[in-house]
Length: 220
Image (tube, rainbow, N blue to C red; front, top):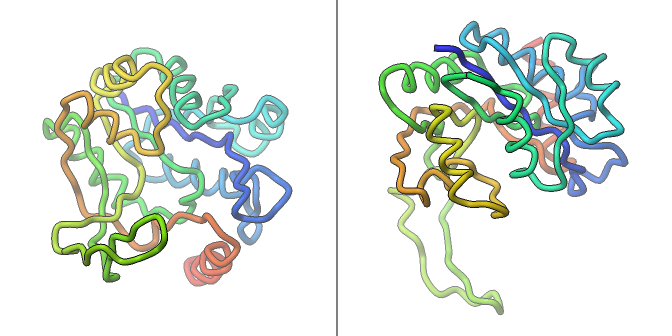
């Protein structure tokens, strides 16, 4: 079964505080986008990668990731994934991966694809939640302490049969979502989990980037 990975990379990454789309920020000597795409191919289980970027970054993205197909993304993440799905053609299995997770290790990607090949229609890598979690009201007053035993932090790549992901997007026209598996859930699909990896951390803030730089130096 052909596996195509979609990499939404059209976001501005305003919380990172840099004047450049986040996927094009450099981690040591390579952009987050390069690292994410190279990691997908290096896993050995991804046949093709489609990257969705802002219109004015098309040429730059093609220079950085010549092995990937580059298309114009949208204003919202869901718009970009829709554009990627349109470019994915007849792919049977689809991964959706954050460019902002540049250190994602190959074994984790392999676990997601293995679960799909084993019969799952939607797969997410997860980690147990380590911190105590509180539910608060609009004024910041604690309402309850949430039992974290059943809670998981979700990472990417998330994996889907192409039919399941296309159906989930068709059932939510115009809807905004930061989690593709959430759309599958709302469409009535079953989402299974596989173990994630701390190295698949998401770079959102300047502090995250500093941590990623240390990790990249250690794994170089």
